[in-house]
Structures are given as structure tokens and as C-alpha cells.
Image (cartoon, rainbow, N blue to C red):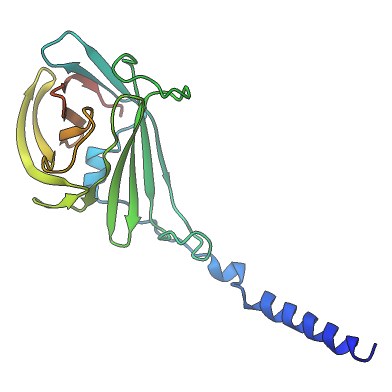
Length: 223
């Protein structure tokens, strides 16, 4: 018993020491007096209100598809110890549903066909990520960094122009033009090669590798 008691005391002491070494929960929490928003470009190009919709036509056909903004979520962290996120900065996720399930079919698992954009803080910059939940098209992945400038590249996609004129049945637009490097190994016909976006409207035109071009026909931005 005399030999066992010091051992027990040592174990108890070590347990107390280790438990006292972890971060105190109160010290992890940050008082977010102000939550930093993404650059204005993020809100202009990507964050239209829920319920907004965009009707597109497949050029040289009578085929249409409508994208509807299903949800726009923003959240932030005020805990610097648990998730490693940039605290007191918003991150954003948007989900847009397709109406044309022939061209944009649901996943075989039954998940609704949609496009998703995420805007995530990384210090003083935000990364823009795209994914598509359907069995037909390929997502862009990380394709833009905000703030951006002409010639920036992300995932083989370049900011080709920031002032492209596009004339559509929905109107005339000055567009941000993003273009994929054609020298990249491309083995998927439904990979977007060119993407055009206009401030306060969103996606105006997207061109696939197989030649399909979808262009804005009409739209409504909720207030």
C-alpha cells in the first residue's frame, strides 16, 4: 500500500495537470463586435436574394432551363480554439435549383439537381468555390479569388476580361469573363470553358466544352 499510494497520487496529479493545460473555453470565445463581410464583388455577382430566378436558353434550340435561388446562408465563427476558422468573418453558401432535369438530371441518389457557390474567408481574401449536384455537368471547384484582377488564375481558370459586352434577350450586360485554360487535360464534355457574370444580376452565359451555350433569356432579382 505504501508503494501504491505515491503512484495513485502521481496519476491524479498528472491528470489534473493535463486537464489544466487545455484551452479554457472562455478564452476561446471572441467578442465579435463587428463581423467582416466578403468584398462587395461577392455580393454583386453571387449573393442574390432567395427566390430570385434566371431563365436560360440553349442557343440554336428551343430548350430552356430556369435556375432558382433556393437558399443563401451566411455564418461565422466566434471560437478560435475549435475549428480553426477565421473568426468574426462571414462565409457564404448559395444553392440554385434547375428546372430542366433532362439536361441537368438529379444525382442517381435522388438529390435535387442544383448549382452551389461557396465564398469562404482566408485571411484578407475570399475563395469562391462551385459545385454541381447532377449527373451531367462538372463543377468548377475553386475558380475565383476575391478581390480579383485581370489575369488572375485559380484552378486553370483565368479572369480573362472584366468588361465584356454581352447582348442577350434579357438585356445588354457588362460582364466578368472567366475562361478555362484549353491546354488543361479535359476529359469531360460538360466542363465549363467560359463563364460570364454581371453585377447585380449574376450568371449571364456559360459555355461547355462540347459546344453547348446557355444564355440568359429572362430573370427576376428579388428585393
